[in-house]
Length: 565
Image: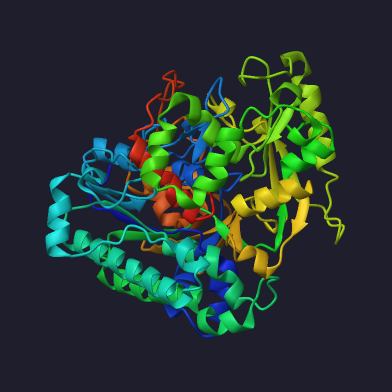
């Protein structure tokens, strides 16, 4: 173990070389250009599917989601159709900063998603996405909260992006994102200079947020490109990257010789289209799912709840919604009707999450109204997979899903059962998720694939760019190779690589590997790689969510704002 090394990890949520490299070739982003010339860089493969909660959890633990238990921002509870939201208490397995702290290193963690409630680290932590805001209980140690407010000033935790986009306040939205980015950097600078640390981890989420909602304004080939709005907002994404470029330059100037810098993203980004894909409608069409239909004389037991959902979304205050959901009779119905519209569970063998390209089998003994016997499970799942492989866009005839996995093909470990039974990956993530307006409209039309006009989308704006599995990694510092292009790096490789850089033993149950290709031969020769044996995890994921009811509602609203829920 060496105490004369330090590591800075800067996370740029959703950052992609698809934007960075073309801008470098145009003579822009001079710091990024220097980093690529003087360091090692390459694609960093995210988890599959590339969901932020599971990706960041794999980043910090070095494990796949089947081991750490975070398969998405939420999961379906056993014996239920309801969702449970993940937090730091859901995750199983120590993070690399916890391991480092146990060995006496000082660590600082700022704005990493799914770190609320904060760990009692040997250093400091400000929780990221999932926290109820920048509040005292989201900071460790708690007294640091008042110190930061007094010494640094305002910290903008999140902004209502969706509301700004819906009202076409594009400039205001971009300006707020920049203000948020500046405030976050000021906090990072203060903590870097005034607190002891050996490992510092800081995440900028603005790259992801601006890409989700502003991609169509800079991309004239996007089907939702509007020349009029593009004049106002075409530089929004570049402005965020440009500001980060200048901040990275400042960080590099302040780095000491014993410090190594890693820049990474949890996933990449790609533009999507004006089309939605609705797997529940496809399952209905293929005979795997049946909708309740009061017009055909079938009883609809959810009339009251449906009206609460459809009318209350716009007109009922959040505080009242929360009280309604505390009523046992209404809670599950309000959530399930908005998410699984009119599904006749008694005659459905499978169903899809309307906000994800995933399918679950309505399994007897697992789902509360399951009808599929375990002996039929594999046969039905395989049949659905084979038919999904043939799903095509009726207009272009292109295959919708480039890859389709049964869950055990991409997850392994004791919590694989939290994953959906079938996971589909789109080619370039072109087709939108079903947000509320789309879901209602698509249900009426019973179409698996539907195109939307600009006018229709203005009712309920959806992200016009989405996640791709190709993130970024850049390694710069005295122990990293110069001008080196690397291949095959995975997000789970970050944790063991950081531990090795710090001279610490690597837990044997990590799935990730040390990124030897980024390291100088001299460093590899002089530093032995040590491992510590870890027994298989036999402690179940904690049943507690880590949230109060109000905090869970806040988290859900934050996910809605990003188009994730």
